[in-house]
Image 1: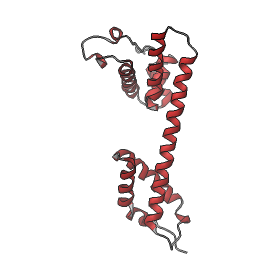
Image 2: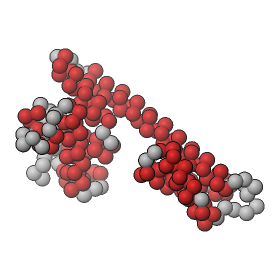
Image 3: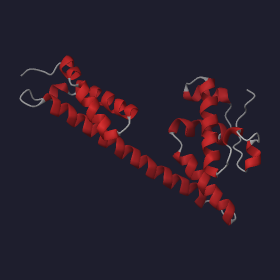
Image 4: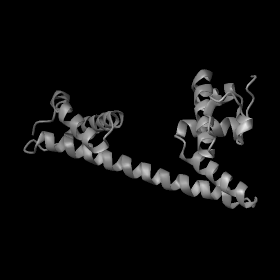
Length: 185
């Protein structure tokens, strides 16, 4: 029984990439799927049956990785929705504020994980930029950039017409003011 070689797998990479792009409709997401599929194929190459189709086996791995990723993302979205509801269920503000709070909680839950982590550490836990950078093992500049993007996304969700001060006003003038952390550290 001959084993599938890494070079055999790499010969099929263009087919894997085409299929992944067809499934994801996004070049970067497709590349992520292909990378995961390549790793899985290399790890499991001993399971390949020599009488089977190499391309078919690899495309099945791409398909399975795509399905698993999509299910994971859908589960995360469901958790985020439940989390946003949990944040607003515990409070009893007036109706207008409740609607705004619910909208902000949903926007917070929908943020990509890196932005949500930074915003939580700085705005909720009160960590300084340096402390957040150390916790996440990333540069302080990355903390600042992600925090800025997270805050801007929440302002957009709140309905601020001019994100990031594009109208010359400041965040406090638009209603939602995301505060927290110690920017001067």
